[in-house]
Amino acid sequence: MARSLVIKVTAGADDPERCNQAFTVAAAALASGVSVSVWLTGEASWFAVPGRAKDLSLPHAAPLPDLLDAVLAGGRLTVCTQCAARRDITVDDLIEGVRIAGAPAFVEEAVADGAQALVY
Image (cartoon, rainbow, N blue to C red):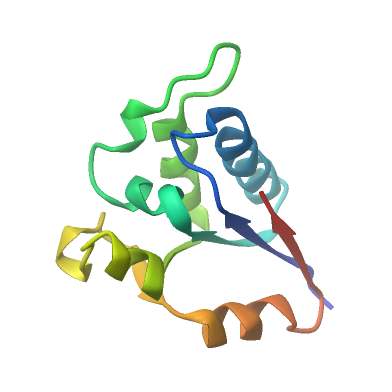
């Protein structure tokens, strides 16, 4: 059975270290051949909007735009439905390839056979 990793990112520019760590783990897992799905919630939702990832800077860490590109190239990126609505983010505002989905979709991914969920 193939393993998959579902990562929920709950922090954005308000907690750059935690946010960057989530994306670093996602990119490392993808580089290792693991199937990865990243969910953006709360302030992390903004990173699904073009150009916003460059606003996060963290010394001694890979740049968030590079990590985001890695996730988009090899994994799936989802913004929480309620989090997007609270920020007036619509599908038209998102980077190409990003989707908006709700809790039922997250639960389905997180409890799938072989899945491991992490929350940052």
